[in-house]
Length: 166
Length: 137
View 1 (tube, rainbow over the protein chains, first blue to last red):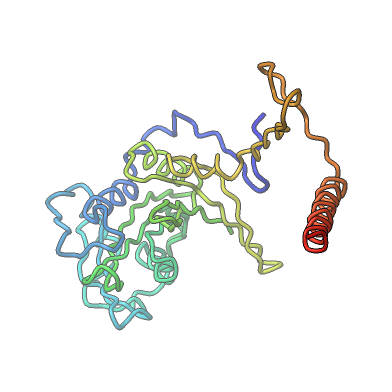
View 2: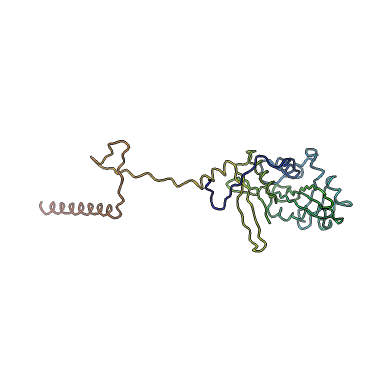
Protein backbone atom coordinates (compact mmCIF):
# COMPACT_ATOMS: atom_id res chain seq x y z
CA UNK A 1 0.00 0.00 0.00
CA UNK A 2 1.32 3.42 -0.91
CA UNK A 3 2.35 5.69 1.89
CA UNK A 4 0.86 8.91 0.65
CA UNK A 5 1.35 12.23 2.38
CA UNK A 6 -1.56 13.41 4.42
CA UNK A 7 -4.34 14.80 2.31
CA UNK A 8 -3.23 13.12 -0.87
CA UNK A 9 -5.38 10.50 -2.43
CA UNK A 10 -4.09 8.81 -5.50
CA UNK A 11 -6.96 8.20 -7.84
CA UNK A 12 -6.73 5.41 -10.33
CA UNK A 13 -6.94 6.84 -13.82
CA UNK A 14 -8.67 4.41 -16.02
CA UNK A 15 -6.88 3.73 -19.23
CA UNK A 16 -10.18 3.23 -20.95
CA UNK A 17 -12.03 6.48 -20.34
CA UNK A 18 -15.66 6.83 -21.42
CA UNK A 19 -15.90 6.22 -25.10
CA UNK A 20 -15.73 9.34 -27.20
CA UNK A 21 -14.25 11.48 -24.48
CA UNK A 22 -11.51 12.72 -26.76
CA UNK A 23 -14.11 13.91 -29.26
CA UNK A 24 -15.81 16.21 -26.78
CA UNK A 25 -16.16 19.69 -28.17
CA UNK A 26 -14.76 21.42 -25.13
CA UNK A 27 -11.68 19.25 -25.00
CA UNK A 28 -10.95 19.68 -28.68
CA UNK A 29 -11.32 23.43 -28.46
CA UNK A 30 -9.18 23.51 -25.33
CA UNK A 31 -6.53 21.55 -27.20
CA UNK A 32 -6.67 24.04 -30.06
CA UNK A 33 -6.42 26.96 -27.64
CA UNK A 34 -3.31 25.39 -26.12
CA UNK A 35 -1.83 24.84 -29.55
CA UNK A 36 -2.17 28.47 -30.61
CA UNK A 37 -0.88 29.62 -27.25
CA UNK A 38 2.17 27.40 -27.64
CA UNK A 39 4.63 27.22 -24.81
CA UNK A 40 3.90 30.78 -23.79
CA UNK A 41 2.53 31.37 -20.34
CA UNK A 42 0.21 34.09 -21.52
CA UNK A 43 -3.04 34.02 -23.45
CA UNK A 44 -3.38 33.70 -27.22
CA UNK A 45 -4.82 36.47 -29.37
CA UNK A 46 -7.85 36.35 -31.60
CA UNK A 47 -5.51 37.00 -34.49
CA UNK A 48 -4.13 33.51 -33.89
CA UNK A 49 -7.55 31.93 -34.21
CA UNK A 50 -8.20 30.55 -37.67
CA UNK A 51 -11.75 29.23 -38.02
CA UNK A 52 -10.66 27.28 -41.08
CA UNK A 53 -8.48 25.16 -38.83
CA UNK A 54 -11.42 24.19 -36.64
CA UNK A 55 -14.30 23.80 -39.10
CA UNK A 56 -16.10 21.31 -36.86
CA UNK A 57 -15.76 23.49 -33.77
CA UNK A 58 -16.23 27.05 -35.02
CA UNK A 59 -19.98 26.71 -35.66
CA UNK A 60 -20.43 26.14 -31.93
CA UNK A 61 -18.22 29.02 -30.85
CA UNK A 62 -18.91 32.61 -29.99
CA UNK A 63 -16.71 35.53 -29.08
CA UNK A 64 -17.17 38.08 -26.30
CA UNK A 65 -15.41 41.40 -26.18
CA UNK A 66 -14.56 42.14 -22.55
CA UNK A 67 -11.83 44.78 -22.39
CA UNK A 68 -13.16 47.62 -20.27
CA UNK A 69 -16.59 45.97 -20.05
CA UNK A 70 -15.87 42.87 -18.00
CA UNK A 71 -19.11 43.37 -16.10
CA UNK A 72 -21.21 43.21 -19.28
CA UNK A 73 -19.35 41.94 -22.37
CA UNK A 74 -20.58 42.22 -25.93
CA UNK A 75 -21.13 39.41 -28.40
CA UNK A 76 -18.83 40.01 -31.37
CA UNK A 77 -19.04 36.78 -33.34
CA UNK A 78 -21.29 33.74 -33.22
CA UNK A 79 -21.06 30.41 -34.99
CA UNK A 80 -23.88 29.28 -37.23
CA UNK A 81 -24.92 26.30 -35.17
CA UNK A 82 -24.99 27.93 -31.78
CA UNK A 83 -26.69 31.00 -33.24
CA UNK A 84 -29.79 28.85 -33.71
CA UNK A 85 -30.24 28.80 -29.96
CA UNK A 86 -31.07 32.49 -29.86
CA UNK A 87 -34.03 34.10 -31.53
CA UNK A 88 -32.92 37.02 -33.61
CA UNK A 89 -29.48 38.54 -33.94
CA UNK A 90 -27.17 38.26 -30.98
CA UNK A 91 -24.03 39.90 -32.38
CA UNK A 92 -23.71 43.37 -30.95
CA UNK A 93 -25.83 42.62 -27.92
CA UNK A 94 -24.60 42.73 -24.37
CA UNK A 95 -24.69 39.72 -22.06
CA UNK A 96 -27.27 41.46 -19.89
CA UNK A 97 -29.66 41.64 -22.85
CA UNK A 98 -29.95 37.97 -23.66
CA UNK A 99 -32.06 36.89 -20.74
CA UNK A 100 -32.07 33.52 -19.04
CA UNK A 101 -32.85 29.98 -20.10
CA UNK A 102 -30.67 29.83 -23.16
CA UNK A 103 -27.48 28.09 -24.11
CA UNK A 104 -25.77 31.46 -24.22
CA UNK A 105 -26.96 32.50 -20.78
CA UNK A 106 -25.83 29.32 -19.03
CA UNK A 107 -22.47 29.56 -20.76
CA UNK A 108 -21.74 33.15 -19.76
CA UNK A 109 -23.06 32.56 -16.26
CA UNK A 110 -19.59 31.70 -14.97
CA UNK A 111 -17.41 34.11 -16.93
CA UNK A 112 -16.49 35.91 -13.68
CA UNK A 113 -14.64 32.77 -12.66
CA UNK A 114 -12.51 32.98 -15.79
CA UNK A 115 -11.33 36.46 -14.80
CA UNK A 116 -10.71 35.22 -11.30
CA UNK A 117 -8.84 32.04 -12.17
CA UNK A 118 -7.28 33.41 -15.38
CA UNK A 119 -7.65 30.01 -16.97
CA UNK A 120 -10.10 28.15 -19.23
CA UNK A 121 -13.16 26.92 -17.41
CA UNK A 122 -15.69 24.35 -18.49
CA UNK A 123 -19.11 23.84 -17.02
CA UNK A 124 -21.92 21.50 -17.82
CA UNK A 125 -25.42 21.07 -16.63
CA UNK A 126 -29.02 21.31 -17.64
CA UNK A 127 -31.74 23.87 -17.95
CA UNK A 128 -35.37 23.90 -18.98
CA UNK A 129 -36.70 25.87 -21.87
CA UNK A 130 -40.05 27.63 -21.70
CA UNK A 131 -41.75 24.70 -23.39
CA UNK A 132 -40.50 22.31 -20.73
CA UNK A 133 -37.76 20.80 -22.83
CA UNK A 134 -34.77 19.78 -20.76
CA UNK A 135 -31.47 20.77 -22.32
CA UNK A 136 -28.22 19.09 -21.33
CA UNK A 137 -25.18 21.19 -22.18
CA UNK A 138 -21.43 21.39 -21.91
CA UNK A 139 -19.62 24.68 -22.42
CA UNK A 140 -16.18 26.20 -22.13
CA UNK A 141 -14.80 29.74 -21.85
CA UNK A 142 -11.24 30.45 -22.92
CA UNK A 143 -9.45 33.71 -22.07
CA UNK A 144 -7.91 35.63 -24.95
CA UNK A 145 -5.61 38.62 -24.94
CA UNK A 146 -4.19 41.28 -27.25
CA UNK A 147 -0.98 41.59 -25.22
CA UNK A 148 -0.74 38.09 -23.82
CA UNK A 149 -1.47 39.26 -20.31
CA UNK A 150 -4.67 41.30 -20.07
CA UNK A 151 -7.84 39.39 -20.84
CA UNK A 152 -9.40 41.36 -23.67
CA UNK A 153 -11.91 38.82 -24.89
CA UNK A 154 -13.32 35.38 -24.40
CA UNK A 155 -13.61 32.54 -26.84
CA UNK A 156 -16.58 30.46 -25.82
CA UNK A 157 -18.20 27.31 -27.08
CA UNK A 158 -21.13 25.17 -26.14
CA UNK A 159 -23.16 22.29 -27.41
CA UNK A 160 -26.19 20.63 -26.05
CA UNK A 161 -28.74 17.90 -26.30
CA UNK A 162 -32.44 18.36 -25.87
CA UNK A 163 -34.43 15.73 -24.06
CA UNK A 164 -38.12 16.12 -24.47
CA UNK A 165 -40.51 14.68 -21.98
CA UNK A 166 -37.98 13.93 -19.23
CA UNK B 1 -20.01 22.54 -5.10
CA UNK B 2 -16.96 20.91 -6.58
CA UNK B 3 -14.41 22.08 -9.09
CA UNK B 4 -11.45 20.24 -10.52
CA UNK B 5 -8.40 22.31 -11.28
CA UNK B 6 -5.79 20.99 -13.64
CA UNK B 7 -2.52 22.53 -12.53
CA UNK B 8 0.80 22.45 -14.34
CA UNK B 9 4.25 22.86 -12.90
CA UNK B 10 6.33 25.57 -14.53
CA UNK B 11 9.09 27.87 -13.40
CA UNK B 12 9.19 26.35 -9.95
CA UNK B 13 5.53 26.82 -9.15
CA UNK B 14 2.13 25.36 -9.82
CA UNK B 15 -0.26 27.26 -12.01
CA UNK B 16 -3.92 26.72 -12.85
CA UNK B 17 -4.19 25.43 -16.41
CA UNK B 18 -7.91 24.70 -16.69
CA UNK B 19 -10.91 24.16 -14.47
CA UNK B 20 -13.69 21.63 -14.89
CA UNK B 21 -16.80 20.88 -12.92
CA UNK B 22 -16.65 17.27 -14.09
CA UNK B 23 -14.08 14.90 -12.60
CA UNK B 24 -13.92 12.50 -15.52
CA UNK B 25 -13.26 15.32 -17.98
CA UNK B 26 -10.59 16.81 -15.75
CA UNK B 27 -8.89 13.47 -15.23
CA UNK B 28 -8.98 12.63 -18.92
CA UNK B 29 -7.52 15.97 -19.89
CA UNK B 30 -4.87 15.82 -17.17
CA UNK B 31 -3.81 12.35 -18.26
CA UNK B 32 -3.64 13.49 -21.86
CA UNK B 33 -1.52 16.49 -20.90
CA UNK B 34 0.75 14.31 -18.81
CA UNK B 35 1.22 11.83 -21.64
CA UNK B 36 2.04 14.65 -24.02
CA UNK B 37 5.25 15.55 -22.13
CA UNK B 38 4.75 19.25 -22.77
CA UNK B 39 4.49 19.85 -19.05
CA UNK B 40 7.00 18.74 -16.45
CA UNK B 41 4.29 18.42 -13.85
CA UNK B 42 0.55 17.91 -14.01
CA UNK B 43 -1.90 17.44 -11.18
CA UNK B 44 -5.62 17.63 -10.53
CA UNK B 45 -6.80 19.39 -7.40
CA UNK B 46 -10.35 18.86 -6.25
CA UNK B 47 -11.91 21.92 -4.60
CA UNK B 48 -15.01 21.45 -2.53
CA UNK B 49 -16.96 24.45 -1.33
CA UNK B 50 -19.33 23.88 1.54
CA UNK B 51 -22.22 26.32 1.49
CA UNK B 52 -23.07 25.69 5.12
CA UNK B 53 -19.62 26.59 6.40
CA UNK B 54 -18.49 28.81 3.53
CA UNK B 55 -15.23 26.91 3.57
CA UNK B 56 -13.26 25.40 0.72
CA UNK B 57 -11.29 22.20 1.09
CA UNK B 58 -8.84 20.88 -1.43
CA UNK B 59 -7.21 17.59 -2.15
CA UNK B 60 -4.97 16.36 -4.93
CA UNK B 61 -6.54 13.47 -6.78
CA UNK B 62 -4.02 13.03 -9.55
CA UNK B 63 -0.30 13.54 -9.91
CA UNK B 64 1.77 13.03 -12.96
CA UNK B 65 4.83 14.30 -14.69
CA UNK B 66 8.55 14.13 -14.13
CA UNK B 67 9.05 17.20 -11.96
CA UNK B 68 6.17 16.39 -9.71
CA UNK B 69 7.38 12.85 -9.21
CA UNK B 70 10.81 14.16 -8.33
CA UNK B 71 9.35 16.71 -5.97
CA UNK B 72 7.08 14.05 -4.54
CA UNK B 73 10.00 11.75 -3.96
CA UNK B 74 12.06 14.62 -2.55
CA UNK B 75 9.34 15.54 -0.09
CA UNK B 76 8.85 11.97 1.02
CA UNK B 77 12.37 10.69 0.87
CA UNK B 78 13.28 9.23 4.24
CA UNK B 79 15.95 11.17 6.06
CA UNK B 80 19.24 9.46 5.23
CA UNK B 81 20.82 7.88 8.28
CA UNK B 82 24.22 9.30 9.14
CA UNK B 83 26.93 6.60 9.26
CA UNK B 84 28.50 5.80 12.62
CA UNK B 85 31.64 7.84 13.27
CA UNK B 86 34.77 5.65 13.25
CA UNK B 87 36.99 6.34 16.29
CA UNK B 88 40.50 7.19 15.13
CA UNK B 89 43.52 6.78 17.29
CA UNK B 90 47.05 5.38 17.39
CA UNK B 91 48.20 1.85 17.72
CA UNK B 92 45.69 -0.74 18.54
CA UNK B 93 42.80 1.63 18.11
CA UNK B 94 43.35 2.02 14.41
CA UNK B 95 40.99 0.09 12.27
CA UNK B 96 43.09 -2.79 11.11
CA UNK B 97 40.36 -5.15 10.29
CA UNK B 98 38.27 -4.50 7.21
CA UNK B 99 34.65 -3.96 7.78
CA UNK B 100 34.94 -3.62 11.46
CA UNK B 101 34.26 -0.20 12.75
CA UNK B 102 34.74 0.92 16.30
CA UNK B 103 31.66 2.47 17.68
CA UNK B 104 32.14 5.80 19.33
CA UNK B 105 30.45 5.83 22.65
CA UNK B 106 28.34 8.85 23.32
CA UNK B 107 29.96 10.38 26.40
CA UNK B 108 28.20 13.64 26.95
CA UNK B 109 30.42 15.83 29.11
CA UNK B 110 33.25 13.33 29.66
CA UNK B 111 35.08 13.95 26.41
CA UNK B 112 35.26 17.73 26.58
CA UNK B 113 36.11 17.50 30.27
CA UNK B 114 39.06 15.23 29.60
CA UNK B 115 40.32 17.51 26.87
CA UNK B 116 39.99 20.53 29.13
CA UNK B 117 41.83 18.74 31.90
CA UNK B 118 44.69 17.83 29.58
CA UNK B 119 44.97 21.40 28.40
CA UNK B 120 44.98 22.75 31.94
CA UNK B 121 47.60 20.28 33.04
CA UNK B 122 49.73 21.03 30.00
CA UNK B 123 49.39 24.72 30.65
CA UNK B 124 50.39 24.37 34.28
CA UNK B 125 53.35 22.20 33.35
CA UNK B 126 54.45 24.79 30.88
CA UNK B 127 54.23 27.57 33.43
CA UNK B 128 56.16 25.50 35.96
CA UNK B 129 58.87 24.85 33.40
CA UNK B 130 59.19 28.53 32.57
CA UNK B 131 59.35 29.40 36.23
CA UNK B 132 62.17 26.93 36.78
CA UNK B 133 63.97 28.33 33.75
CA UNK B 134 63.92 31.89 34.95
CA UNK B 135 64.56 31.15 38.60
CA UNK B 136 67.09 28.38 38.04
CA UNK B 137 69.27 30.39 35.67
